[in-house]
Length: 227
Image (tube, rainbow, N blue to C red):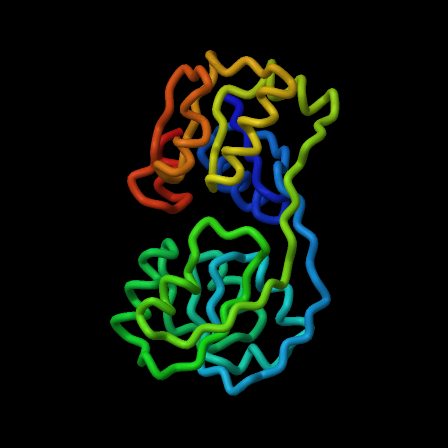
């Protein structure tokens, strides 16, 4: 069984390790290229910093004051990386953005001043959601995520002739794959799509699949249970 992991490499390598522990093989072909921005952010008396992606952590190198702030995050791996970078005040850690918003509303005062560090493409508008609940949130884009539009001959061959399962970790990744299918005429009838959410399914539902499976919760652990 060969599994395609189309995540950015820094995220995909951790997924590959988890998959290999289950005795299965995987292929990494990133569909998104991450470009970190050299952003200096002034501490505007922020009470909390919000991260919903591991990619946001890179900006801590340019803004060391962030390590001393209270941090609200999505994902156990994100928390693990932050702890290794000596960030001690991780107050909330949820499996997905929706759960994080719910926890913020339950546990964080509305009067708080929050900084949301993120990428240029968001699958969930956390800032608007919190603002609608009267929270003061400032967002700063600290990395760009560009869609891959060209694949090598080797990558095309792997997807067509080796891959049996495709993992979709975000609606955007699913949409990029659908666009690549049209461009390269990939054969998907013999493949299984494993989607982290129904929104991912919406992007690939028009393709012909052997089967589409949807995770019972929006996290990688539940996705891997479907392999």
